[in-house]
Amino acid sequence: MNSYESELKDFRDRLETSLRADDGWLALAGLFWLHEGANTVGGDPDSDIALPETSAPPRVGVIDFHAGQATLTVADGISVSVDGEPVTVAKLVDDGERRKPSLVRVGTVSFFVIRRGDQTGIRVRDTQSPARASFAGRKWFAPDPSFRVTGRFVPHPGPRQLPNVNVVGITEMIDNPGRVAFELGGRQHEIEAFDGGKDRLFLVLRDATSGTSTYGSSRFLNAPLHADGRVELDFNRAYNPPCAFTPFATCPLPPPENILPVAIEAGERM
Image (cartoon, rainbow, N blue to C red):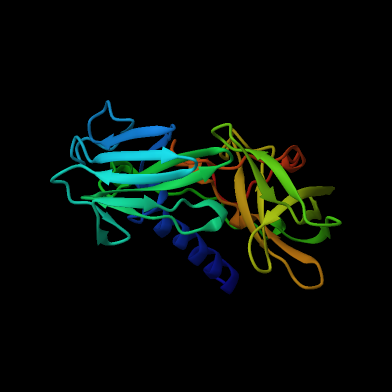
């Protein structure tokens, strides 16, 4: 195994470890959208926020949701913590604007508030989720150097956000600093890039393998961006979005410009 293949294996192993972790995507156990007023929380299936009934008490409490603010009131006799501290009443911070949300724990179950577009919801995890035990592992194409290419970053004239519909049908505005031009399969392509953090771009794409040998909705790719505008596109690192592993994710879908006519038989498989 050469140094590149070793680095690629390490990257894929880290994705596998993250997916299987206590707070990984396989641990997701529910997604519920809040309505104005009182939202009941507990293991009772009739709860507005129905926690796994084998892992949570039937009645955990109530989340009052008003004007975008969620406040948890815990039922008598139930042990609940928020960010590691025991509480009976707590205002919950959501994950909007890349904030770290308040983490509520009750037994093996945890949950937190997410904001997606104009919707606010509760995402639930359970370390005892059956998906963690039954998952057979990610599947990958063998490394192929022909799918490592250098692209060129073409910035948009000014700050721009792209309206993007996610997998649950909610439109979100995502920072869209520019596009990437590159050649692959003997053809020129241009795709829109999202902000991936310092010196990185985040790409959401679909190609001619989508729905056959690769996941149908999309794959993700993190691409280093150099000061001179070069973009490293290594499609051997293209990976499946969380919605490939759980119905409780809210993955962005590729914009029309990012649906490529070329078959990218590299990266993660179906």
